[in-house]
Length: 157
Image (cartoon, rainbow, N blue to C red; front, side, top):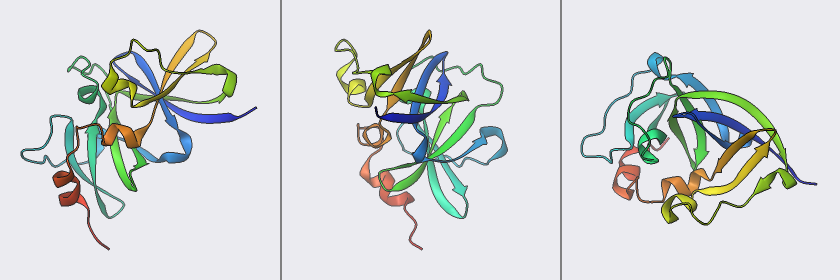
């Protein structure tokens, strides 16, 4: 029986999860300076200095076209590996770490919008909770982040 550990986070009252092995750190958004990037996608919140490297922050609330107003007092930036980079994902709250067994995971329903469906690896069911499992690599290549922006943010060591 395969098991997967997920970091679970909340956006607009909905639970999402990513593979815990991809998470590099979590910080309060109000404790870091986010520099805006002119002419970037609406979902790009800006750039930050993460452990001496320039990383960009993607606002998942905007990416998924959820309510624009966040009622979370202290939103979080979850730093994670995606497309061979470390990227920040702005979320309302990081809520849990859950280990799912393979039988607790179902494929994404067919009625989910095609563009979003590509980003979903499955739906985790545990007790009365449903966790939408995301593929971060596909979120970044689904059109919100253009190659010009990615190229301008990559800093060689």
